[in-house]
Length: 227
Image: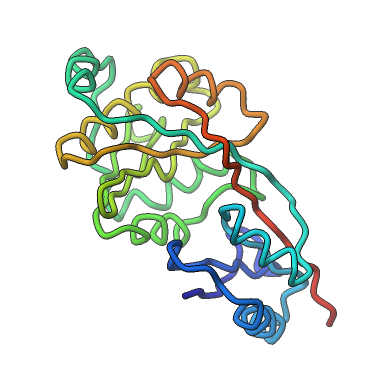
């Protein structure tokens, strides 16, 4: 139901990942995970994004909220095919050997605390039964990339990153539209994405592409560990 790994770019923080998002963890299972993190010598344990009812269990286990994310949804309909007809940029497959350079883009876009490393990008791609990853290149450099997944009848835009020197060039727009087209081709019912509650640029992007903000907000929680 959960696993513990090192937080990207900071081995002193343990990353608590809940594998089964459909099940509610027990307080006892969270405490077991905390003890496992403690045995690694970590100074703290931090979670991935949690739905409110899961966050309540973590708060009961002594975790505190360190970030809040907005959850958005877009119903998938035939207009997606029309909207993606005129993509500005050429999108290429995101191969395994691109992960190192993609991690550099991700850390440039989100900073070292929230940016992914090569390993955690691989975890994102394995988080759903089906995935779709595309990137935009500028010569030998990666300008931006998107990783999407599908599970049951829903699609998830799991990661969208554009390098700081490539913003406002419609790269993010094209990557999201391509992801939506892939989800629609799989006959999924809706697409979901989350972003920082104060990330106005991302909220404007998703709103312009038909996403609507849901009432639920996601929580990232952290607990300091006594040595």
